[in-house]
Amino acid sequence: MTTEMTADTDTARPTRHPTPASVRSVPRFAVQAAAFSEAIHIGRLTRTGVGFADKEEATDMTLAAVAQYVERNFGGGMDCDFPGLGVRLSVKVEPLSPTQDSPRGDGPR
Image (cartoon, rainbow, N blue to C red; front, side):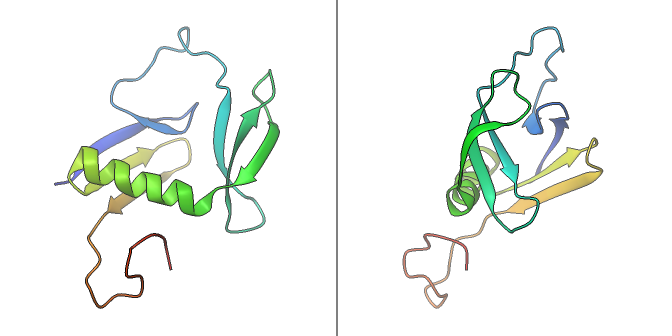
């Protein structure tokens, strides 16, 4: 099953119902793709919300959380449009077969 979603471009997260700008507050934490590496960072934002106060690499944890989220909430597949970025994300989660690399299936290869 694939579910269509659109993204709230101000916060770059999928949402089923757009939140009015007057209701949004500055988030305390953020997730960001690194500009000069393949890492995904997560961290606490400054009070103004324009930069990280501190951050750490969380690539595997982030991807695993996305896989679990899609599997549990969307039956293993979803598409999400990010009009502000000009991209569509398609996610398909499948169980590992017994012959694949990881016996536990605990991370990307």
